[in-house]
Length: 296
Image 1 (cartoon, rainbow, N blue to C red):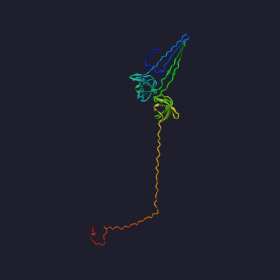
Image 2: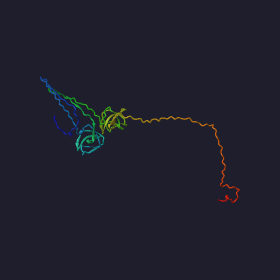
Image 3: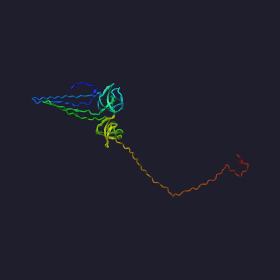
Image 4: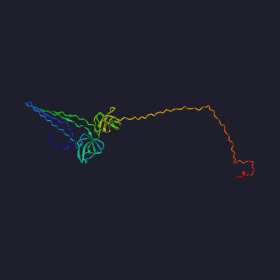
């Protein structure tokens, strides 16, 4: 029944009270008078987590960031988380050295990173709803009967990819389908790009990824990281067949054969007269000592 203040460093958030408890006390005496007392307290707390991050939140790194063993710049760097890595917050946030630090799990490493370099993308677990209906009845013998009926109905929340059971998706690249939500789990099958899958349930984080259960068209089941899934059916493949060339008909003309019985006209050869060398021919009847007989 005490009301006061405690430092948030020493508590862990486990849920949010969303129901309004109602307590009814009805004492009944078997005497000459009957009194009825009804008390209805109403409590609706509204809790805002420090830094806007709470246990169970899913975050994704905007850039490469160090993970430390203590929420401070003096903490030892125990690992480096690449950009666009999905992580799960494991507890409440804290403040130190001008930063808000959140505890996360990265593979097998548990440590702290500065919230400045991450973006909240979802919640891995649902917020439980607790409904209590106390029934307090008192008789003249002062023996109260208390009946409490708690009701817890968790509603799973989709992961970063927003996939729900029954959704259809296809692989955006070649990716392994594993037997469990971990990079160390056995490989069930290598899925090619544009392999169509059916989401069979809600996912869970593991090994730095958020995994969803899937089933292929041939009823092979396993887990695939939702980073490599695209909503909707796989795009249709265009035909790669080359059309056959169209044949052009060739019109053949009839061949005219030359007649074989045409007579051949022969031309008789013409005989040429022998040439006379006028430069060297000297008449034999010239007398000696003529100009034609002297050397030139």
